[in-house]
Length: 327
Image 1 (cartoon, rainbow, N blue to C red):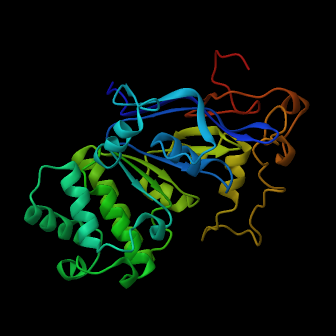
Image 2 (cartoon, rainbow, N blue to C red):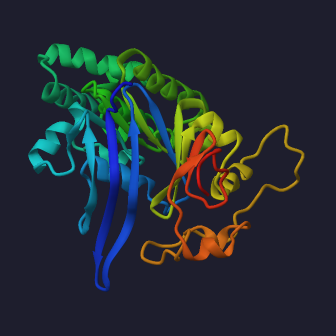
């Protein structure tokens, strides 16, 4: 088997507070192979964006990794010195952030930012870097890229700025791209173009993709596997087709029930009652049990770990157990 490019082992993240440490990620483990696209989905507050920030070392203080480890191509990276981690970002790991205004320098032209990134990570002279920068803008769907290089971020629309951020993330030809809601500001046609570009990178260059989103349609279109997060943990993970067609966790089933379908005769979509618990206020047992319509006594006192449930793995006492395994 191909060794994983990205591997998380029991990752834990805490934030120090006046009343003590608050755990925000708890025992997150998964692996992503070269060329594979893994989607991470869940409600706001599940820990999706925090997970991406922890992987690339961009946790805002007082947040810090307190357990587990992050490995890239077998090398542990969560304990690297800041300068080594900075060199890693952009060259081996590209990041696409949700808000392009915070990712672009308003005082520099788009071309200056792209050329600087390219020359930092690749052996290119100024002319070659500028030509490559124009090519990146063209690949992400920006018209007249040569002229656009000399414009400032405020001269671009929100969707155009997001495409510039995507171009910056791809500039260093990274092994891994972490994309946090990369298509939120884009219209449908450009969204399809960008997703096709990310898929092509995986197919042609072996670039792995960690796609963080709330949009199950984007997950279904782009990813090979999906991890469903709830209250700082992964509650189900498996091939996209299997998780979306036959979810083994009630939370995943609730998310799928809230997605409208053309062939669905229901007049009302499924609603998950209640709301995501805050970090530090997670209930005992299974964190989803106060909102789960199938919760039993065991769910309130024992926390389930991920275990095989058919073609997927689910952290649920009610998930189907393969023959020969103990319930």
